[in-house]
Length: 403
Ligand SMILES: *Cc1c(COP(=O)(O)O)cnc(C)c1O
Ligand SMILES: [Zn+2]
Image (cartoon, rainbow, N blue to C red):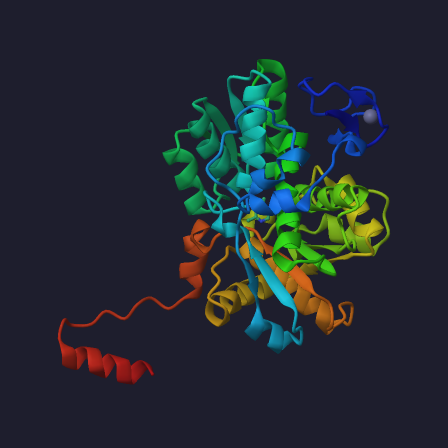
């Protein structure tokens, strides 16, 4: 049993009402369960495969879900980077290993399932890329049409390719992500499409399972969870999941929620560092990490609370720091991620250097999307392969000259 509750004023709405903002105060809604009536048996969970649906008692879906087997992503110990930074217990949760290559799949398996449960026949989103790729795939799986709005010229190639190939109606807006979200929100309210941006409370329910899996994989709570922050939905979702487990008595410690943004797009970092009650939107967000190129994060209110209530913090990293860490993850650990994902680990490096992070902490960085999402940014950083004649002497001399 659950209901929708306004995060601003606490007004309650029935679970089957299709609503994204409180009609009293305009704030976002969250899913609230009757936690006192839920008993979690961790042994029962452990008998199920590691995946979003392992945790179905804490998810709102009651029909057979629309699934591509999302979740169950690897947790890697970063031994070389950890040693360089001076953190022996540094881990990366590789969300790029989801079906469409980002954590958005966790949200969409729940969100698109809820669309069907609520008898909706079409879905829509605005996207910096990954949300559209994921929605397109899950809508195809569900057999319903999807409309996606992208900021023209600012979406990584792999993500557009996915949205197109999975058959979504793809439209490029001459404007940024924040404008695309306003437009799709209006479209959904006026034309009855089901909105699956992170203003949708059900999508975040799926994403909170990142934290649940980390607990199961580590066998304990990490001291700190570090996430790249764009719309701030994911960090809010992971925190919400931890709060629920704490309420159920199965959390052994609340991790410090830590948000990392790109320097050119860092309204949450500014709000945390300057102690502001609300974020001041960044009118012209700019960064190579297009997945977090968002100036007006819709879940900022939830994220500020998550960071503040857990004694966490927020930090900004430059594009150079992001790309250097993308290369380090790829070349020193064998982990291929897109730029936004590298921001979390780059942020940890910076927070160690500035003395904010204690070297004994156990830290899990969520790396959010796969390397192949943004091949153009990869190719730009790498030397082109040397072209040689097709004979062994040419091969040997080439190998000698480049070693
Ligand atoms: C969506 C996304 C983010 C940002 O997540 P928010 O919930 O918007 O804060 C970060 N990295 C990648 C790869 C993403 O796709
Ligand atoms: Zn309200």
